[in-house]
Length: 192
Image (cartoon, rainbow, N blue to C red; front, side):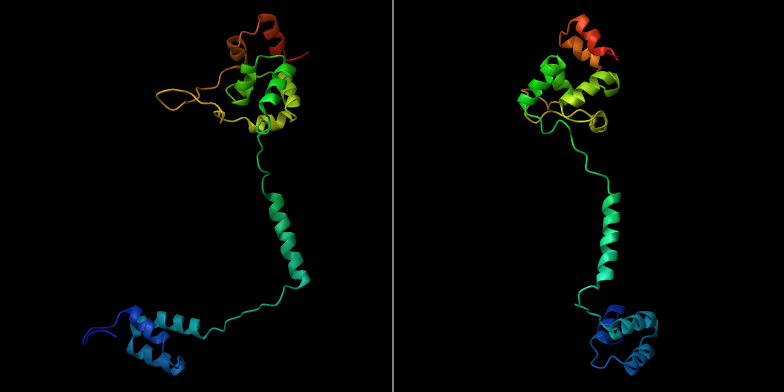
């Protein structure tokens, strides 16, 4: 196991015990007498080696399968539903139709799609009209509103990587889009 005069290592003692032809009680007692410093490890290994392997290939009983299915259903029900982006499936033509339906310039709907507009600055009435135009709910729009994302199809020629600035107010986007004062007042109104 080791050079003359040196005590064998724990690993070499356990390896030697594991390959004994008769790993019974007498072999364990002999190893315990020879290597008392490894008593706990030897006993643990002996128990592990003498343990019966239970290999059951029989199918589960119907009651057991029902319990597993019920637990899995409970787990699946507790999982949060995946968040879907209400804007993800809309095509360019759809966005054009949304802009016409809301009676706003396309750059306003682009700012909405990219979420460059602060959600709290959008009037509830307009948010409801937007939700209806994109076949969604106001709640789903609110939940999907997060940090602005660059549209995948847009590209810029610049020295650095394009970045989105902070969100701006809905009114500011309308001003930047050149929406006349009267129309802006109508879009910003909370009631009809």
